[in-house]
Image (cartoon, rainbow over all chains, first blue to last red; front, side, top):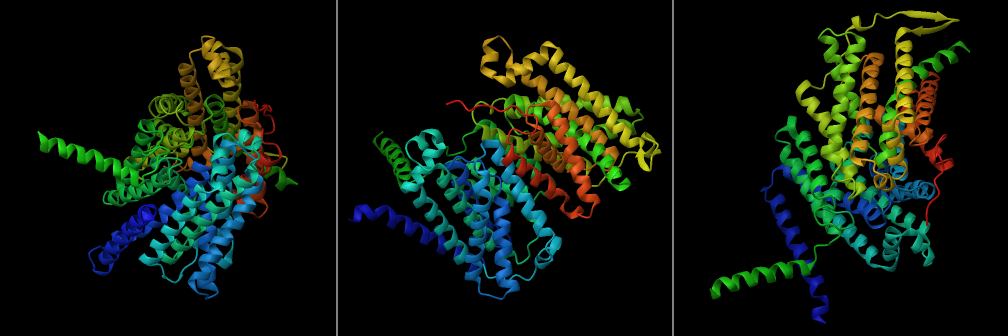
Length: 322
Length: 292
């Protein structure tokens, strides 16, 4: 009984410790405002990267529309709180729902396309969203929305990240998730086995879109100002890079990628002129020398730690016996 | 009516710049199935090199040739350093690498030359306007059209009348089979990048003169739109890229001319999604049967 739940209990403990450390750091004034912002950004990036990985890594569809879905979520959420004056939880629900609906509208027709064509079509969708938002006066046009309530704090970010990761993990582990993996490995064979490939492609796409919408709502309610131009395809590229560096098809890889690149970006802020040049070099080097990403398709699990622990233990023992 | 003609003419000039870029895109995509995101930035480098040559006192044609040569070498270098090792492993990693190269070119330029907009000196082309039945044609329009037509004819000759062209067609049809027949695939890919990037440099110089602006991020939008043009015309087909570029340019200038200038950038993408849904192989593309 205890053995069965041991990993989950350990994971909960580790999360609780992580949560407390950061919370103490924030309320105790140990972290500067700059790093607090970057920790929040890290959380948002983890949600974005893992949800994009669900579409690109686990289902094998190549989507570049993430910035578009994020924008839909951000602006819907902002309308709910800033323009309509409704509470924040409603903004989250509305933002995710709107992004999911956008996901269905974009997904149903375009997911018939293969590979690069899908990539360009979804990229186009993202740009259309941006241009349309710039032309709607209700959401401020090109100058965007201001005065969105700043309600996002560490507990909200933390819970959102944990729930998103849990949702994706359980989805991949379920029979639906296995169907998605089958579509990725060979869609024709999957179809032969009776998997409704369109259904599963759209399902994964919509879940990914809804989570991007969540990230958008969080983003809007942290910065309190959003402009359409922030949600350009460069943002999608940033997220894609996190997924690629971490490992396509590895959920923990996305977390590692998001944390790593947000940190790198934060440190490089100190040398603004060279920041993007170094960032670009990092991308090229990681793509050329480790094309499968840091983790490949592997996951970091408890067993990984056990194995490392075992190696360490053996090494220590050897030293003692010598 | 005159308005319409005028807009169509503007669209034609702009479209032929798109066409020049799209030709490079379509060649590179046709041969290695990689969306070369750095292609747009090669345009930018080309514009800067041409600008530098003009400022050093070279004329229009020598500057054009210098820019084309420099960018052709740059293209080969990009392929060698950033794509060759990655391509066979994973297409997504190659795409990441392409995005990296794109950012690298943009921000290196910004670091060394600053972000401010530079312009070609007016002396490079004294503006003249001709009136043709009420439609205004500037010599810029003629220059852009003429250069594009000449370059595309040369390209068409290379691809269909030379051994190199034959090798390029073979590799894009089936790389593995071509290799078995003794085609040096790596060299052929390098030559494709050489030619494609030279075209991009020419487009960069023309773009810089036509819109009178050269800056580090100038390649982004034309790059993307040229890719759309290539898809519209049928990817892998050079006449298709021409047609797609010109159609896209005309549609955009019609939309801009008749009140929708804010939606100008969205139009290209709407066209793209429509064409992908209705005829994914593009207007002149060949349908490829999926092998089972």
